[in-house]
Structure formats: C-alpha cells, structure tokens
Image (cartoon, rainbow, N blue to C red; front, side):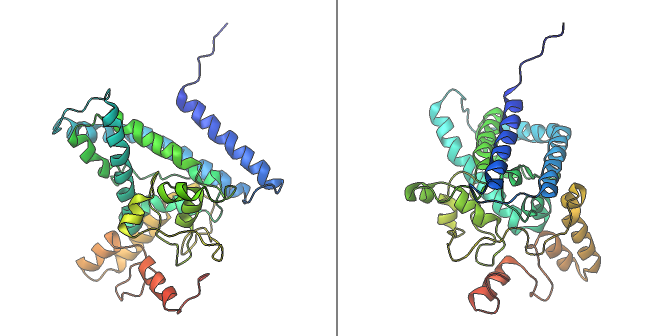
Length: 303
C-alpha cells in the first residue's frame, strides 16, 4: 500500500487560501458581508495564479542566480540567527516592496507585468491570487538586490518577502471595514488596499505599501478611504475579457502598438518607460492628469 506524503507548508497555504475564498464567497452570497463574486472573474484569477506559478518555477533559476551574484559581493556578513537582522530586514523588505510597487504603477514597462493584478472589476480574496506571468522577466526583483549586496542571505530575503505577501492576502476583501485607528495609521489594511485597487481619480496610484503605511505617508502617496467616495475597482480603461492569456499580455500588446506609432527615440522611450497612459501631446489618461482634472473639477469623481 502506498503511503501518502505529508503536505508541505506551501501546499497548506494554497489550501488555506482557497478555503478562505470559499468562506468569503458563502458569506457574500448569504449577504452577511460586503463583496461581489463572479464565477468567470474568479476562474480568470485562478488561471492567472496557475500561470504565475508556472512561470516562477521556470524562471526561478534566473532570480536565484541574480541574488547569488550580489550576495557573493556582499558588503557585510549578516547572520540569519540574529534577531536584530530579522527586524532590520522587515523594514528594509517593506521599503523595497514600496518602491517595487510604486515603479510597477508609474513605469509602463513594469506596469505591463503588474496591470493584470488590477484588471478585475471585483474586489475579493480571489483578486489576491491574480498574479503576473512576466514579473521575473522584467526584473521586478531588482529592488531587493541591494539587500543581498548588503549581506542578507537570499534565503532570508525570500522568507521575509513570503511573509509580506502572506500578510497582503487578507487585504483583498470588502468584508472587513476599518481597523482601529492606530492600526490604520501604521499598517496596510483592507481599507487602504481597497483605495489602491480603485480607479477613482482621487484614489488611483495611491497606497503602495506592503505591510506598513509609513512609506506612503512619508513620500506623499497615501490616501484614506472615504465613505462619500465608494471605490470603483478595475483599470482606468477596463478590458472586457476573462481569458487569462489576454489578461496577462494585453498591455504588452498595447505597448507594441504604441511603439509602432512613435515618431522619435524619445517618444519610443516614453511609451515604454513613461507613466501608463502617456501620450506625446501630454494629454493622455495618466494618473497625474486624471487627478489634476478631478481636483480642478473638469471631471467628476466617478469618471
């Protein structure tokens, strides 16, 4: 008789995520909590997670090799057995995540990899697993490379990053209102992350933090959720598809189309690395342009 091997911690986490998604779905359907589920949307998110896992496995060697390259040139010897090293890494990892996340919204080349996470018009725990297929290819691990150069072993960096992503899973829900004021001030919460996923002009490109809110408050990218401003989820220009392949690559295709219209190297550069929505006349639907139009009353909040 064949004996079944025990499940790994990663497998238990996958099971736990799906159980929590099921619980939230049942509570939503029973009208006990806020939220919306659409089966095609949820299946699209699951498809995106499967593709994300597959590409991460295929390209894991690239990421590991890059971290090893910088760690071999480390400036200091940092021991995983040091509690102070883990405390320092907690803040440094979150700082790196803030800048990775901000660049993923403000640079179109990285946005093309990250946009699919924001493509759902619903906001529930299944949104958390709607993850990119091209993140490793565009180098989204780069903000963490300096930590390896400082001397943090890659295993420590991967572990801390994993805990950060685990924390962020529960943020993707409308079922939880606001946390106590002190917690809302210091940490990322469902309320703050709802703002981040909203496309309202006053909310777009805000609240980039992973676990902490201190970086957003420090660098001027924080916005609080307002009761008179319900979050409208999705993209500034939504895509009408539930096909994971189209979701994963639609922005890359749009970028290629724009590049074909570029009339100079500068325009080509801006189409690739400028803010999403950039246009040569400066009037494209960038986050800054939309926010400026909203602040001056030229567009309504729900526009």
